[in-house]
Image (cartoon, rainbow, N blue to C red):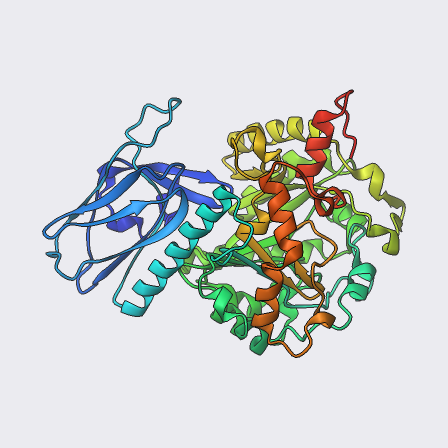
Amino acid sequence: MDRSLVPGVDTLASDGIFPTEYDGDGAFLWTRTRFAVCPPSGQRYLALHLGRADSATRLTAIHNPPLDASIAAGWHWYSFDLESVERKDLELRVDGPAPDPRDSRDLGVMLRSVIWHNSSERHSQIEGVRANGILNAQEYRSGAVVMRSVPPHFNLSLEVRCNIASAKACVYCAWKWMKQEEIGSPTPDLSFVKSLDSYLSVAEQVNDCSYGEPPMHREFAEIVDLIAADERAFSFTSNGKTLRHKVRQALLGRNVNLYVSLDSATSAGFARYRDDSFDRIIADLRILCREKKRHRNLPKVTLSFIVMNSNKHELRDVLALVHSVGVDRVKFLSLHREDCMEVDGRIQPRGDFVFNYDQEIVPLDELDSIGLEAQAAADEMGVDVYCDWKDFRAHHRSAGNEPLCTEPWKSLYVLNRGIMPCCFGRKPLARWTEQGSRSVQQFVEETRNGPAFQEIRRSLADGVFPAYCLSTHSCPIVRREISEVAPDGSDAA
């Protein structure tokens, strides 16, 4: 695998690291329990993006005086001040190999990025984000109802317009319903985004959740500049029609995760769900994937593909297409049950094709089988693939006494339609019409620790799905849990 996909890997001694691997967030590599870095001349600070499944270990830089850090479970950035280090190889030691009985390698830590810099402010920022992330993980595991930490995954919505929906919305998009929900929302401009700095400043990742096309925003480039940083990724989904020269220039070299929705391997197949822009989208994607090789291979480009009954036979073809285009990864998604589609219509004609939303939903058991077939084909072609339904198994079946879901602790959704507790929620826990004279920060703070959020956290920590979750039919965790406890094993959601 290509080690260049891990930024800064060229400053690591090759005998201390293993080949590149992939997880749901992209490329990483394992280090050995001892590995070395080669400090570039004139660089004082070393920042490492590291991951471990457990937290019972330390990372130590072996020199005088020694530098060390406690390794927390999960992915975090760590920053070392190397002011007194001599300019030669710096040896790092992980106190205790990663416990994995299935892997006999001398595994230290997972490594996603290496950065050298001279900013004391950046050093402090990294350490502040990590401290918040560790506190957040502790609050989640303990089932805290009122939170002191800020959710490390921050979600907002930037654009209400779409260059497909302006003519006719995609067949599975609840466009009309959403536009009704957005009435009375604040203008999502650069000044509004800046008003959320108390959350952005400690966020590990910022995601756009627009029912719209984000690059259409008149301040899109400025917003990317504000949000995307080497230690903080900005993620958004595009229909691909806006990826022309100006937008590509705003993305090249930026820590951006770009998801391009395609849902078919052919122009005719694409037109069943969207419009006739397939060929142009593929052409622009080829250019972007070629250009970004000269810009640290950024942005990371993922092709999103919703697996439905009408396109599930295309998975091998779309993997071959992705391989030829040069996209970094394919993410297969499941079509969720959506009550809100009643407004837009669950049955929609597209030429000779009639899209029936309910009949397009693939059962979870079949998705599991499809995922295995897709992974085998991807391995054969050398394509990185990820299936989102693997994320959504009832959490308590493998996590002991931890809450059933991480969302109300680890994520916050400050969206056009209101403040939400999770990505599948459709009913806001607070609408913008309730803000009154409160500042944006005060309104968000009082909501995220308010009675409704507290009740959801309390129920999930007690091992019980609250009424809000049970009424959210699009949630795969609830859906899978109901199907697993149904007497006949069917998908009862």
